[in-house]
Length: 309
Image (cartoon, rainbow, N blue to C red; front, side, top):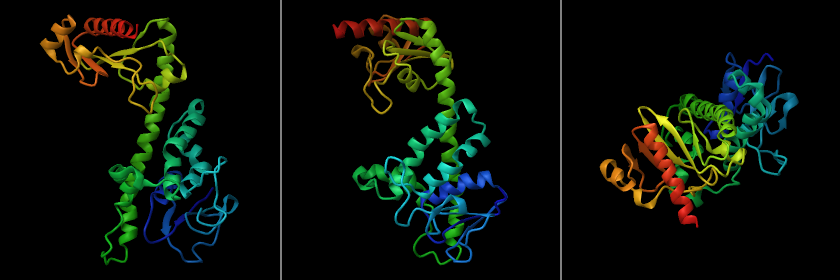
């Protein structure tokens, strides 16, 4: 595909066409981004991809707009933005070019779509009301990216285009880091699944290093595991496990008597030499050695069952 021009609308910009530009510019690095609403510029051609403008969604002519009626929808009826359309048609190529293996391609494509693309689609189409989030709304990705837009009284005729280009590498970092995180999670899942098979019925799972473990434990339905231990630098960590990825509720908390204690106080309370720290919320503890952290884990398991009885 010999694409020479990536065309989106001029003027103010939103997250959807900015993020779309990241995907397309990566796939077609020699193509020029043109921001315009001129009719001639928006006329379809084999060497153009037109997105977030153009008045239609027609992949055959490489036009990916969503503002027209009827607007393009996902299979479940949720609205698509230009980012959703570009990801639908170019996302897998983007992942392949970023080194994502065929083994995990479909999963990462779908997970990124659900966790990253869909929220952009919903916000851009007004299907999510950010005002209900109060102060948190100001930290949503669309708002953060749109903060790059020039001030209302900026008089430069290129201000919007300059701001758009300035925001592109920032938007790219968000996409790249999210995909790298998803890829790392899949690598971790493979390691953890193997370790769970070897651990039998143990309620404590020891990992060779810190890694994301929540999704692996949910996917394999390993509900018998209550705590995770792993090395962190020269120290060792004891971690609780959330009941699901989107909550702070834990399968089992660390002993209440440890909460907020450090060093000697924690050693005395736990009876374990080398205990260093327990968070006040009782979801993580630190020890100097593997032996100490395993003793803390064993004690945490006993405490959980005693309080459960």
